[in-house]
Image 1 (cartoon, helix red, strand yellow):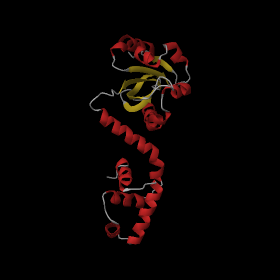
Image 2: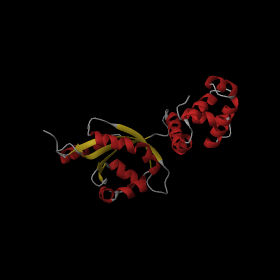
Image 3: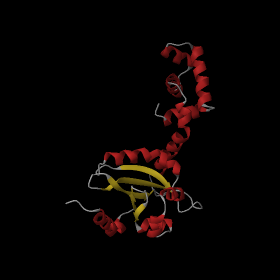
Image 4: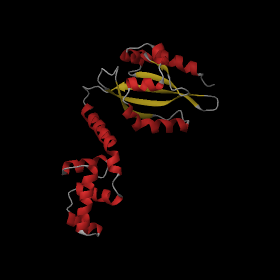
Length: 221
């Protein structure tokens, strides 16, 4: 027999202090918070009734970097549409207590928590764990997050390149000269020079380092 939402919620509440992270249960009908574990309430400096009363737009604006939402919102929507309660998604997000506090990075994992009698998801559950700044892997995480920010900030510039320009960008990044590229692609060296100029202008880059950074970030090399 399937557990009711209330039975599932009571089970989570009973064990919430044992979980090394913040537990959040969100109602999909109005996107309000249904439950947040004491650890999370303490971090944000609010009580459960207050957090449950906040509208979703205000909640996101107050505590989260909305730019991060663009990175994982589609994954969440796909998960909900799949209706599969066994699937999980993970994502990084920045959280802060108020606009006067610094951002803290969290690694969050989300799954469907409960579905109705028609198998339509009604609630999702998130476990959010802060990334310890003293952790030995933190430098690697920082590099990943920096690259993610670079991708987000420069996606529009990269999207302006044609397929031929992307092909040439890749060859430029690995050190190929115009004459070599022209021979490989069977086009004139003058045409290659024009492409190189257009690439630099579109990406707003000044040197080889910046060019290589684009190629690496967008998985060309």
